[in-house]
Length: 334
Image (cartoon, rainbow, N blue to C red):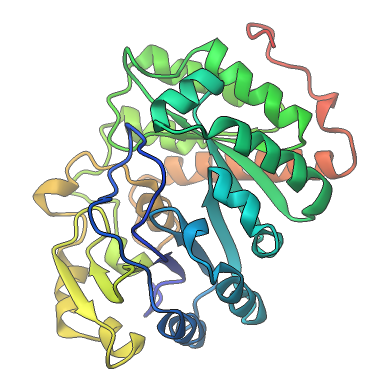
């Protein structure tokens, strides 16, 4: 295992202009990261061998200096990703030309998405996708959070509306099961069916992991403290993860000092074994853990890797205008 994580989850703000029913972000605090500290963190993380930078929040497009951060990340040769939503995205066009991947967050058609978010988010997302189709050269995805249950969106109408939009604007669909969701077998079968559509990415490894109960504290998959450097908007290294933060280490002495601290070393021994780790499926930590040296279900890793290769293939076909050579799954009608 590497001494330091290769992935950084960098929270730029706690602010968000949406109120999604499925989101766990605390919107009571309105904190923006410090630009100078953020730039220094990016450079320090690169010196420690980091390769992947995910900019998150809150809603990261709300910070005025997003372009400056993304430019530094590009200059440092990071692979960068960001998830965007809402009308503010349209005001960050200069910045959003830079990331390697932009994910546009939608849950379904206009009515479902706007009701789920309690704001008018759907039409700005469509406008952004139209702009991205013309101006962006790197990958643009629609990230479709699959929400289980009676109020969920795992049905042909909601998925079909997203798929139509993706094909119209030449975007990939990233099917993302809501972490912590109580999925039925039928719902998971539906997701597998949707994954057979051209231009859709759904990790079959995630499907297997969910149906087998998620993280097992007795034989943990999650190695959040080892595999992801999580930085909060107020400038702390968060352990073991952002969603279940027990400890926050200040970065006043630098990122390397925080990663080498005795506190982090303690979490390296108990990561994935805490009470709240039981059944966990928070993908921003689980997926990097799969590709570490100490994963326990090699079938999950193999299925996830195959799904990613399919996504790369479909993105390549899209680049050559041949994406629709793959016929839609016969049981699903657009």
